[in-house]
Image (cartoon, rainbow over all chains, first blue to last red; front, side, top):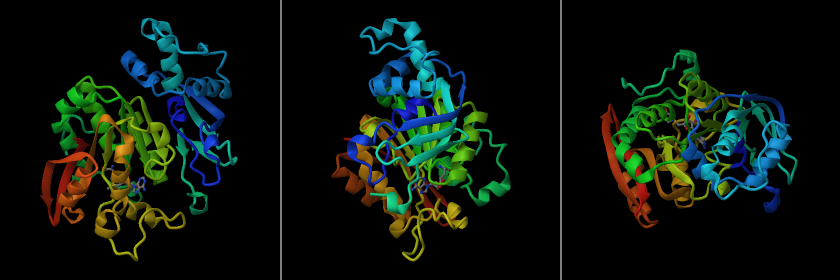
Length: 128
Length: 226
Ligand SMILES: C[S@@+](CC[C@H](N)C(=O)[O-])C[C@H]1O[C@@H](n2cnc3c(N)ncnc32)[C@H](O)[C@@H]1O
């Protein structure tokens, strides 16, 4: 599971208070890095949908904050900063959580990530 | 189906198709419908996020990725399936066919994504379980019943619309301003009624492909904002 996806997922557990649904905590036991072709325009487009603070926190949670240094805020002139775009590309798309779990911050419910695939299925009692 | 965009599926054994939907005429027709609309997609939609619900083997998203690459369209491919075996096979299909950037998630339709993807999906693809089934037959997956993995790929409940309708009801919330949805429907799903209902919610529906196979009449519907 990529960090871009983590930035889009929330907990749908019935008992979770609404303000705790997003973001999910991450406990990663196996993380790999893998090359993905850079598309600058895609990164610029997707940045409008990314919660930057959540991305920074996710990088920290998987222990990559020393490997990937990102600024605290997205610079206004991001388009001219190819170096930063490359870093964001790397953080969002090239890091894969292979094994681990996502944790609902409101209920502690864990969603497993196995072979790179997160399982968000809830049982009927957990559903709204 | 022979197309230069068809993915390699060598990693899948015949016995996997006991648990995962094998790409069939409906899958192929959906691909053809999307291919026919490549200029529309490229010029009008310019997709950033492409979401396929119920990806099965991943055939359709793979096809779309190859078609898009040739047409210099690049987006993030999100796929979901309620069947964990399908999700695993799809992920392998994507790896084998170099589909990137992609994500596969096991979930019910798009549960977990909704709020954050509000008005963000540029392309939504769904070949749903569309076969009308008796109310006594369960739709969806029963964790205790292996057979439900495959039956959930076709069992559609009343008019075959029970699963599809949930997605159609969310379209306004999910689709981006230029976003578009391609779905498979059967004659029994009553495409005219689908179109009429969507019209009142602000959408146009076009039949982009139609095919009769044995006793099934398949439609590919393209749904977009008026
Ligand atoms: C007709 S098959 C299509 C498979 C593949 N997209 C294709 O075209 O070959 C329907 C797929 O939807 C999945 N499905 C059924 N109900 C679902 C649900 N509630 N959420 C997610 N996927 C679902 C099934 O597991 C199956 O893979």
